[in-house]
Image (cartoon, rainbow, N blue to C red; front, side, top):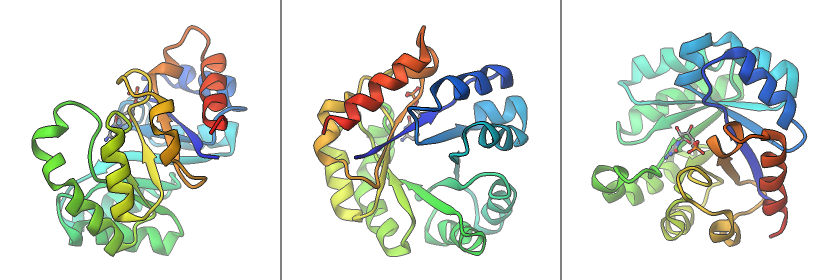
Length: 214
Ligand code: C5P
């Protein structure tokens, strides 16, 4: 069975921690990004982990030169269990993060294709090469779009790595369209459709049940 990762892009710490408490029984991991960390600081990761004791991935889409990437990874991975990086900046930049993560026994997840409409112009044309690069660099997983199930399948086949896939819910992706492609090491990412729901607990429960029904 694939796993459910909550994208917790809220801007208020109390709200973030309340949602974690509510949905804890139904999620397998948490993804935080710039919205929450810029609003509350990196300490919020520790507070989330204290409540749910689950993997927290920092979606910082790191995209800089190797020495800057290395610094970002060293700070982030003091707190988070994994970090998301961009691949288009090149092998050396991704490798700099991988080296830090390896020393700390943490994960590096690399973006191949993004899930929003704007991704079609610049990142989709190079996404297959990025998937090959991810395979070569042996990152822990890749990010692929659930808004485009055929692309998800193609990129997963190329990289032959676990996937984490955003786009279900608010961006229009449907779990039933990607379920056949998912294995037990893969994560479906859902954000707004859970944390903006009237009843986040029930929303998370429904997504979890849908994932179970493979
Ligand atoms: O709210 P929603 O379910 O659309 O959240 C999706 C999450 O996944 C957001 O945190 C977004 O930044 C992230 N993401 C994405 N597409 C990518 C990579 C990350 O939507 N390719």
